[in-house]
Length: 249
Image (tube, rainbow, N blue to C red; front, side):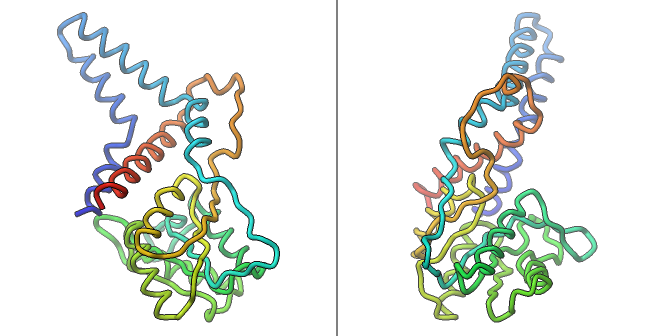
């Protein structure tokens, strides 16, 4: 049920859809005053949520800051959350915009910061195909000469809650002791940390795939930016998911 709710929420967080709906109301409204009000509202909403300055401020406040592994410290496992690769429709996959999760996971293993990688992620679609992210990623790790003995794959989970639950089982089966490094996008880390800790998994944040590393202001930030619309949807979804998970799960 929670899985379906999250998919509905993702659909509703398409801010362009809301702007379109407001402008449609303005278009078909017969009352001139109402038409003007909705038209103005649509323009204001569109400008606010296409504003890079406000989005950068939100990301700077929300994102978990970058952390370095202390010199000489080695963890038993880095848990790399899926969502960084997608189904190509032909039985394979491809890396998407969150691929830094994969890069940082491999980097941690290759530099000896962790002994194992746990890739957790199946297929999060409502009508899933045969693509399973963790299985596809294991093949990519083989190509990068990461030994199979150092890789754990969990291909069943569909969301972060299942990531945590299934990862816990796998770590216990392989008798790997915590704390573990948790690798995911900075915008996703705050909610992920809470979920894993609620499941009793001892994790240390290792954020990556940053939207911004510092808050700064430039003239371009005041111009509408189409990319900001998608970014706002991501952060609103994360914030709602955080509140729901904290108080209702």
